[in-house]
Length: 167
Image 1 (cartoon, rainbow, N blue to C red):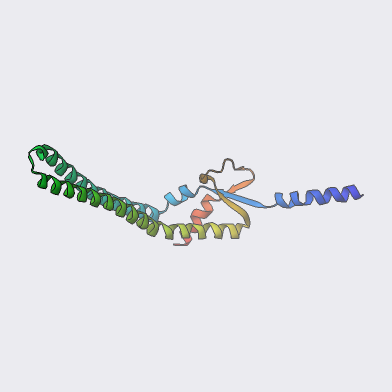
Image 2: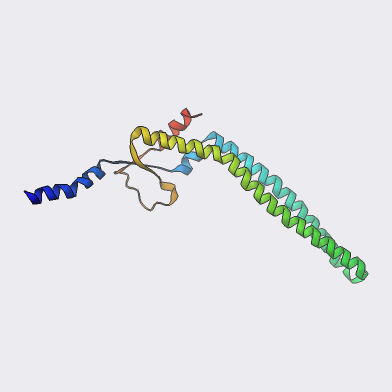
């Protein structure tokens, strides 16, 4: 009788664990289907093109002036050489600074555009989890090596429906 009670006590946690609900979804798939994500992505890409164009103009100007300097360097007086070299160095520093500034601005823009979408998605997942009494909802796109589709429920459609309600 003691052995039977001991065995029941050992398997009780497993039975409780087996009753738990687990869910999974591919967050990237869900996010990419959102109209506000598509709009935000378009705005970010548009700004990136503007920055790229400006940087290309700066690089072209730097290259043109560098080529002119190299062609004329042998006939230039030393004072003019030094002045031109200083000008080229200044242009190069401005170009590097613009690259850094643009990268920081792009990162900030992405954060501003995507933060509300991420918050909305997290709220939708939480709502689905609470309503369905899930213990975990895992993102299968995050590199989880294996998710059992028989022991875990795909909640992608539920999360998409919840997102539609949160608009």
